[in-house]
Image (cartoon, rainbow, N blue to C red):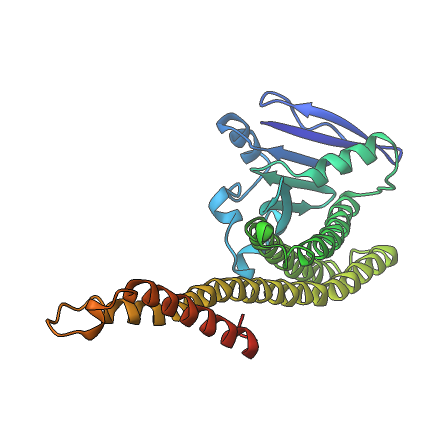
Length: 316
């Protein structure tokens, strides 16, 4: 829980942590509120004419609630992918751009913010205003989405090798389901980024420099080039799921086939045993001295004959 101020001094960003009793420093271009508590939200209300966005508003999926203008400035509710172990979830962040101040509010930690802060400390960012920071965040998100797609391809290469290994089917299915969820989050984030960039380009046409306009066009081109990859990953995931189900069915059919063949092989001996197990008074073989031995021989021969017949037919 904290509010971080990013202060621009001679194209260098200084990072300062603020409390509810502090005032916004001069030349601040970005205020980042992470899990603001009640006191911090009250402090933020002093910066907004309208209401401070809450978690329910951040999760709203309607375009009119995610990209809009009001008296506080330009608002963008952006969706960011966040990978935790094997799982990937979407994190919503509210951005408000007013004059030369960007205010972001988020309820979850985002690795891209930490990466951006790391770049700032190493002076690897060329930032001149608040819009540059917003575009840099979106650019890092597009790059991260590209990395996630590459990881998806690598994951599916590994799962493809496990399809014909029955002992790894369960782990492979879990990995495929995790990858399907991750790919869905990637696709949602790409669509959300495309809408956000188009909204920025349309709304700030008069304020953007030629370099910023070109930057947005390049990001839009990258998003358009990445979207087909997500569809290909979906198709590949579905193919591997169907293939694994087919292999599982084949293995089950083999087991059922063994039981079926065994039942047929032992059917003739069972028939012979059933015949001589009947309790009729007049059965000529009952008084035969070698009847028991002969019935056993018949049972063995009938089983072997049936087994050889199946083997000749290629059913075994």
